[in-house]
Image (cartoon, rainbow, N blue to C red; front, side, top):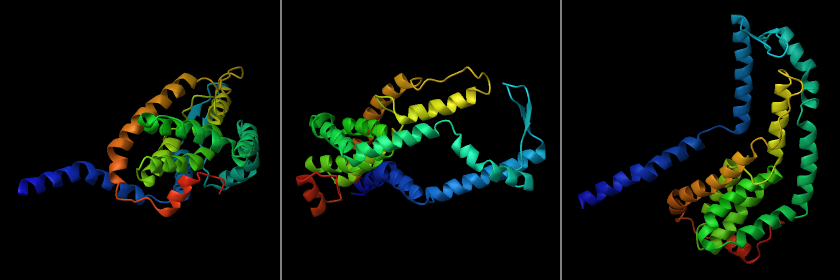
Length: 263
């Protein structure tokens, strides 16, 4: 009896105990807004320290020596305010992001994106449902942040129909949509966004250099499959067993009978 209890204790520490520690640690993280604020403060303080130390670098495109600027000084604050609008308006991918947002809004508002993802998710065999959910979550980023909103409830409905906890489905769908946000079978807005940023940087070296949006395409396709396999393993090994205690509520059962995401 004592050996059985010791074995159970070691098992809890080895699996559930470690995952519980990660869960508690993650719950202690502050809101992303405050993380962003702290990073901004860190950048400002770093600029002051590097300016005080006289840190400089050579621009490879022009050969000009660029010195670190103290953003805490009066000149730094004035420069920050004066160039705030121009930095925002002349950011290379800004126009593309606006255009894609309009297209994504139409696709999401009309229900096209939700229907397409739901049709694929509900039409696959049961044996490959888990990897497909993660792959759909990754490919959902073609609709930008809309995939994070659409994929988790679809995964919850699928898990409910399979007799599994919908909470596990929500977690799997959210993990697939966020962990694979830049992976896709198709060229997504993120690819074009990063290509624009990279091109803007390379222009400091050579104005004629252009970074194509397809530069990472093969890698992104391979990453989608790897995410599906790895995500399915983690979900089957850890997520689903830890969520068995959560029962299916009446609201979820009603959603399964009438799987409409329009609400």
